[in-house]
Length: 117
Image (cartoon, rainbow, N blue to C red; front, side, top):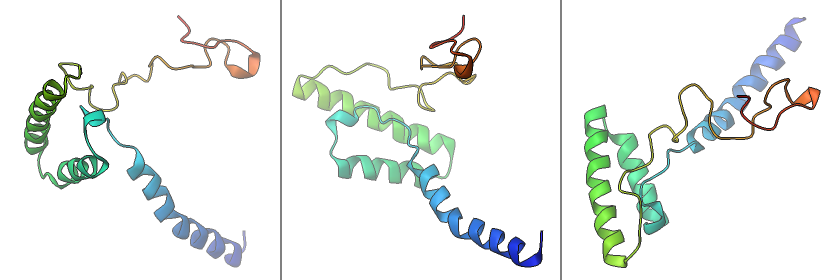
């Protein structure tokens, strides 16, 4: 690879980095009671969670928010689960969620459409 091609590749990578970071930032954890919140409230909650310095501080923000949403749901006569969604999107850590996987044999072999068990 000549020097000019290498420099062009490095420059293209550097220029695309902000777009990749923006996509990563869009992956957001579900918010308990979000259906009872305005967009501004959801944005403020996410801001507070990102600004929290420790896991303990984030846990306190979550607990306070949980209580407020339970009270709001009761006042509006809306049923929401007693427990907030599992952190990390509610998916198991091993990646074996309830989605449409390729299953045994993979998608290319025409096999599967779920789980593989």
